[in-house]
Image 1 (tube, rainbow, N blue to C red):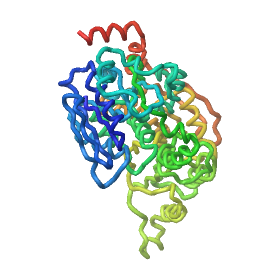
Image 2 (cartoon, helix red, strand yellow; image 1 turned 30 degrees about the horizontal axis):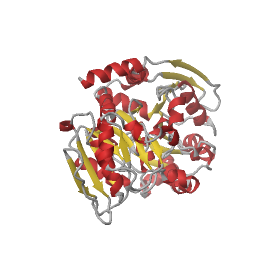
Image 3 (cartoon, rainbow, N blue to C red; image 1 turned 60 degrees about the vertical axis):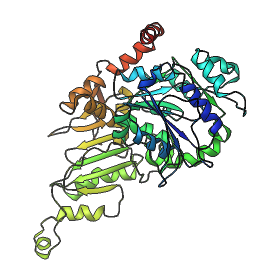
Image 4 (cartoon, one colour; image 1 turned 180 degrees about the horizontal axis):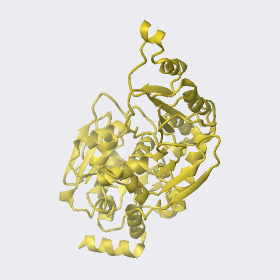
Length: 468
């Protein structure tokens, strides 16, 4: 386990955080602590009371902020698992152990640590006092729980049965303070977006979800957050500063449901259409209603099967490539439409992908109805039969990413149907009535695992075994 502690100033709180980490029940020879100084003035220093394997790393100058500091620490990490812990957190003695036990079960889990917020005054306690309380298993007595406050994510966790009930927005809880993922999974996702000075943890959690992560709330242990966070002091202003940046990158953000259709950095759905041999009228009947309707949060890729249409005199006079030239002209100025010679690989940041083997007439709400069906039955794959040829496919990126991670690639449809469920749908074309036949999945092994560990009796038994 590599514990990455991003820090900017706050030497006193950092000293307390390291004192608590020095008293963890997790074996010290299996844990390193990386304190990343994000340009503090004066520079931070390591106190004498700290974990055995602790390093102080200066953040590199090409960027700044918590995202850059966490990425810097993860880049130096030698452990198989990276635990991000803020520098103003006093972790209970079994905090690291409680999170680490999950990562022995699966390498695509994102484990969220529990915390409560307390008001803080300088000089309230010494590192030695914190270390003693934590070492004796009395960290809960450092502050009065009735004078502390919970985080808003606890309501989300409770409403979703400990996140075992799937919802596309479950990723929202994996934000800041304390949480862990496998180092290789961290790198696969690409780390945090250093362009985001605010809200980078939310956007990172979203990309974890799209990569197939299962989010696990670890409530067997806890931590004290020293001080009330800025978002609680200036909630409205903080939201105004964060939302536009996050909404550009997170299609599932609530703002996107109420904003007028436009071209976003990351669209809600990628629509891939094989247009080789199709007329411009057929293509426009498929594309234009979506772009001009309420489902315009989309990106179209028109797969031509070859390069741009020829523009030489002989080709134009002979009519060669005439339909493709019309398509190119129709959408040359539309940022949401692109032409490609081959079908692109799925974009890991886009939550849904609709693949059409040919243009079909769509209505302004056709895509929205199909997406609503997928969410209503919580399917990973929806197939819509067409009059001839292969069916249209609506794929949930998170489901296919998890299936690909588990199996390595082959028979993904079968794996997705087994761990997430699949549905057959009619009504994609404007003239067809809508109907759905859903095939429920076998229980996702990761969700079964979560339910099992959420059982208090079995959790206590496991912890007793670990302490032996």
